[in-house]
Amino acid sequence: MDGSARYTTANLHVYLLRCLTGMSKDFGIDPTRLCMGLGFDTSDLSNPDCRVSFRQAASMIRRALELTKGRDRGLGLDIGTNETIGSIGLVGYAMLTSPTLDEAINLGLKMQSHAGTLLQLDRVDSEKYMSIRANSMFHEPDIQTFLIEETFGIFLNLVRALVGDTFNPTSINLNYSKPPYAAHYDQVFRCPIRYEQKENLFTCEARWADKRIATYDPLSHRQALAFLQMTIAHQSTEDEFIESIERIIRRDLRQTPALAAVAAQLCMSDRTLRRRLADQGQSYQNILDQIRMNRALILLNNPRMTIDEVAYEVGFSDAHNFRRAFKRWTGHGPRQAE
Image (cartoon, rainbow, N blue to C red):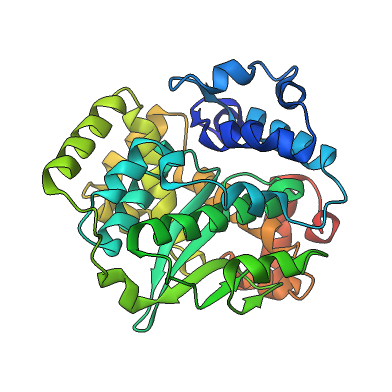
């Protein structure tokens, strides 16, 4: 499935959109206005079987941002910090019955497509710290700040629901400029916040990973996992196959793995990997190009980064080759994308 098809495929859970309409009256917005003309209404969002495309979700969020322009608070933060662990459906219950925070977070990341997230999340660990990294799935710069705010806001709530209100992150890195309402960030996260960074990172001390979850129940946990597997059985295995390849590539885009290395991590031969991609009208190079392009478009929004630095971050040895590739991807040079 190519990027444009994935953008318009209705496969996203509507937890975030449901919360957005539920809070809209607090912002002075008629919730029906948010959905008008998008192919669904507020009653649809209450249906657990409702799915929307990323295009539909982005259009609704964009409309909400336009209708709340001029606020002295981050709309995404207000939404995220009002969501609870129950806001992500059965995935939240499975996390709540996990034995440790480490296992709960890994489960949430594995099941993130079933928790309604509109970003791609992965985990980055070091000896002292554990970080959640957030990347865009599509180039939507006008809603990126909202999506990061909402994602990090609800993640803060999720962790506190699992291990207690004493939890705080040690730092937040954001790849966009400091917003006018930065005081709202300080109020919510209560930790150092660094803007115009290379990546969006929510970081805490590694010791939290071993924290036991008071609501752990092995039987309930097994039941939740079993039910999750039943409810997602209809999802295309080929979609999961593509997502697995993308996840491997994103781990370190600067050192892009060769197709053979990806095949090995998926426990298959090079030939099998090529065949399965061809069956979907895909190629490894197409997937790599899409990930590189999306990452480059995000980095180009950072005023501190040079073209040489962006090229390095997306796996090019020199800026000349990056410029040629970028023009092939987009039809114009990287400076025109800033």
